[in-house]
Length: 408
Image (cartoon, rainbow, N blue to C red; front, side, top):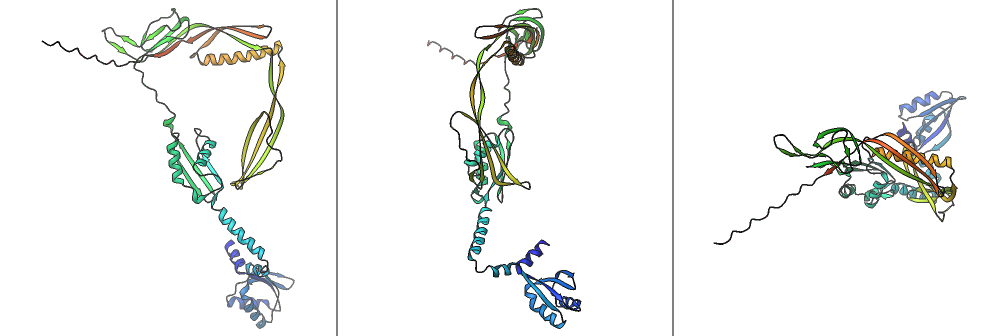
């Protein structure tokens, strides 16, 4: 139906009224001659209809034969508009320029949709595409999709394969990661030992590979050999192996956390917001405020404008500039206790994360106030896996050449 309306507008049509005793005779005769009529309406003994513009003479002839008066003729469509504005050359030039502009802009990439894994962020991909000639505002004919794919796949080992699809003014980028570049296969260890990472008393011994050198209840020192990768069997056979074991022991640790009484705290004193609109590659400032001078922290956000779910080549960039000043602060004892407890919690978290399944058996904390600050002293009794693997490299020794025999 839309195409029919467009064709009627392009060829032009007329709207007219029929006045007479028997207008149905006019309609029947027009139908016999193959003249299509549409938009028939009847109001106050007057019949209105529409027909193509070039059928006007035929409709006048039919009206004379049927004693019908055709009046109120109104012209519509492209021929009427061209005839009406034929003396306005500027309008014609504007339409031509508008059509050429639309044709030119339809051949430029205005939006780029990037689907990339977490291994590569969108900003990195956009920078790589910019270096290889693809960005907003680039003519689609100048984009070498095959060249971009080959160059990025070769230069960046994190990219396994990618696709670049140019659809009208939109570019669709899909990237698949190369997992082999980030997943490192563990190397096989021909020989390794297990040594202690702290002093303590052994509470549990679990050996999966290797020969244990300690038992439950033994005291151990730091860097002492706990499990050996050199295993000797009862039949005299000696085997080199990669040790796998867990040796738990009671250990002691202590830590001193310091907190000064007086320090400076950064606080926001001023915030400056700057907005810029990027339209068809042209940046237009939305605010008069420029970039501030001095020490500021900048945060930038960029949002693309969409219409009915389709991205438009319009971006709004907002820059927030925050000015910080250091304000002197003096701690009180209750505030210091709270902050030191928080620092101690962080210390315990990282300490237990690095102790290989360690648990705290006992903890004693004391907080003392000094002239320049506060000190928290903590003593810990832990039960932890004290094993640490040490790889023993096996180097091949070159055979010494045999000494020549003396001449007889």
